[in-house]
Length: 119
Length: 113
Image (cartoon, rainbow over all chains, first blue to last red; front, side):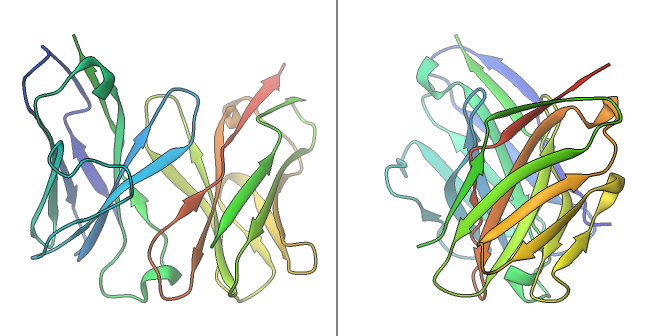
């Protein structure tokens, strides 16, 4: 149980295009999902907290207009990188915790990540 | 504010040897602590978690960790390393009532044959 599916796993696109990444909780409901960015050989950096039915909460220094987050249902959150540039190239990972439990007592379950390469 | 420090960005052990990955945390309230493993080009997989129950926590793949409040530590151990244990390991902390995880910098574990 507790599977999080992230799609696509790898995307290459030209500079200036927008890219959408999907994160789905397959067998549980998640009122909150998280989006992380990971640079090579570094730790995960929390970008934003995605809340179902409301606006996402962004971490300091993360551009809201660059990284659009939508959490339209209890099982789906999307991250859209708008007008992507080479510096946006990175590994993006989403996670979710079972929304029916005390949040911090339950581990977050992670997707397999999306490697984004902007040419 | 919470923080996590993983001592040693790279640990190398021989197959069959003891694995010890160090994690120290800082938290103003009783923490919840987690160890995750990451294989190349993949997300994170939960190894084990401490949520204020038993201080010695057993996880998957033979790993365990001990919560020591006096030392603010949560070191990860495995008695006998296997080649398949080679991966990146992350220690993380969250505060009760909060979902946000704070990760350490990670420790890359290499297993020598």
